[in-house]
Length: 141
Image (cartoon, rainbow, N blue to C red):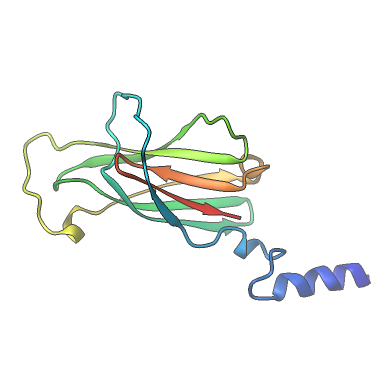
C-alpha cells in the first residue's frame, strides 16, 4: 500500500520522470549532415516543430513542416529503419504541388503531419526524431 502511495505521489510531481505526461520533453533541432537516400516521395524542407503527447494507449506525434512554396500536400510521417533500437526515426514526406505556386508567407506554407505509436511501439524507445531535407527535430525521454 505504501509503495502504491509513493508511486502515485511521484506521478503527481510536475517534473517527475515517473509521470508519463513528462516522458517526452520539448524538441531540439539539428542540421541534417548526411546524404539522404532518394525516395519516391520528397521530404519536407524544414521541420519547424515536433510534439509528443502521451495517451493511455501510447503517444501521438504531431509535427509542423515548412515546404519551399505553397501547394504541397499529402503529408505523412514514415518510420525509417535505424541502427539504434532506442530511436524511432520518421521522414516527413510530402507531395509537391501539381502546378507551380508562389512562395507566400511562412504561415500560409506550414503543413501538419502526425502519427500514433502504441505502448508496444514505444517499448525501448528513448528518442523520437522527425527529419526533413535540412533539419531533424527530436524529443527524448
